[in-house]
Image (cartoon, rainbow, N blue to C red; front, side, top):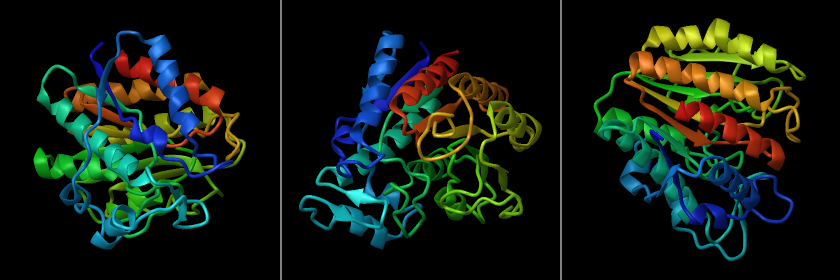
Length: 305
């Protein structure tokens, strides 16, 4: 399979505490489902990101707050975002997976990668950890692509049910990075209105609660995918959150696993057309364990072609 998967054991050890929806079992279920469905997958252990790589998108004070403050038991950064003793290492390897995946996409034969990592990242702003997220791994990956590979057009497609406010905020005035999002509204974090355009590089399609998979597909088919096609990205990054699934407990959309498979295939087509197939996907949300398994398999099946 011309697809590589990055993960790291520390991502399973990050533990926000009993009853927290962003639990280690999420990643364990994804890994088990992918191993069962795709025995030939190329699994690689993710390296850790460096402080310099993180500092391309994050304020040094946030980096220090996550990496340098000792954690005894649990440390709460906001009402939703909790660190345990393994969280800093997990966040470093989640961001490092994204960087390694970008490098892989430019190295040769393997042009697609999936980062099976946690904590998620797309809510983390330049200065603030929030919404279960410590570092914004997809933003770190985009900045690495600009800096290390000299790209001029990097696209981030985000289909998590929650708007990726952190990603949008980081690149709001960066024309080399296009951010496209479908998400439920109203819903946390309350950003992502259609009128938010940045410098012409932001495209949001809010979806009303109880919108179904057909509505999700229409948003991408009629608005987001055409905008992505016009941008002609040299690399496609994906914030792959599966909490728009109809069974997810944290939102009220009605997508199913086949909808995520369809959308992934369309993103791959655009990557093939403009980016020599280069596409890197990162796990974001998804909090019903059975639905998360099904969606991850559908997503990776489409990535593998």
